[in-house]
Amino acid sequence: MAGARTRLAVALFPVAFGTNVATPLLLVYDDRLGLSDWTLTALFAVYPLGLAPALVLSGPASDVLGRRAVMVPGIVLSGLSSAVLIAGADHLWMLYLGRFLLGVVSGLVFVVASAWMAEHGRDAPLWTARMLALVMYGGFGLGPLVAGIAGQWLPAPLLGPYLAHIAMVAVAMVVVFTVPETVTRDRTRRIRPNLGIPEGRHRAFWTVVVPTGLGVFGMPSLAFGLFPVLLKPAMPGVAVFVSGMLGMLAMGSIVPAQAVIGRVGPHRGAPLALASGTVGCVLGLIAFGTDTWPLLFIAAVFMGAASGMAMTSGLRFVDLLCRAEDRGALTGAFYAVAYAGMMMPVVVTSIAAVVGSTAVVLGAVALTAASLAYVLRRTTAHLATT
Image (cartoon, rainbow, N blue to C red; front, side, top):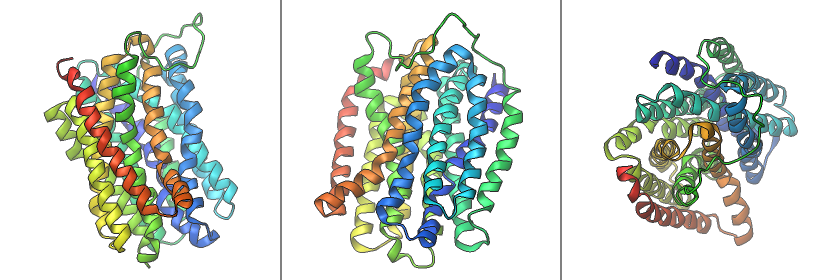
């Protein structure tokens, strides 16, 4: 049902666009409010705190109530989140609230849309996973690019990007009601938070899905959530634009990354994802140590490619592992792991404050990613013929 998939993509794109609009604008808020590096990364990382409960509940809820019944409130909340951020330009607590609500939105919409699209794309599961990732990353990348340009050179940078997002959300609300429902509401079944892991598949989940999922947003969050903050003093006059460009480059590299997955398959793509992330992390470390901020552009491409390969591979692994009645729950579990990676910037700055060296912490992250790539190469081998 290609038509249903396309309409879902149209409904999903505005939500993905709005998710990262605020990211490059954090540097504008910094100039306006005088925020510390830790506060900036905390504003970035509060997003997963709203995401976690929504992820736990949205999948099981949509398995019982239907996909549309859960996705529509999430789309509405996406627009409301931008309204909160508009109102919070001079109020730090409202910025935290807006980012928190965006996390809730992602938990509601991305999980349900993924399961819904998979059900409309059973004739072409890998193509569907690639399309889903392309739409999400397209929104993730275009949002910060638009905001970065507005934040650096246009008037009212803390208003225009959010208003554009709200207008797009209005279109999404119309389109989502044209997508056929795939779940029959079951009033006898209770909504219970669960991971949706079938019996006998727990080892595969923890050794394959979890390491793959951590690479999905862990790597790009470093690229445009941490590196621009660390190198802001070295980028006078262009820091906000550079931050937006990093977001666009990281998310735009999904296209070549998907081509790799189509050629080698998810079982090889998952280790390649973390290997690519390791390269990006090392480049970011060099840029930080030498104040060579143009290196961040190359790092963002590698880290974005890592994210794209991890997303496509991870969704394919979920499809291989799940039962039809638990698709939403297992998809939610995958996204819970993926979005946990967005805590990386605040984790790095927090540990760096203790050990006294951000470079040492970034080096440890790179080493960990390289180790996980090696582990995944072994644990995904049996999926080559699945």
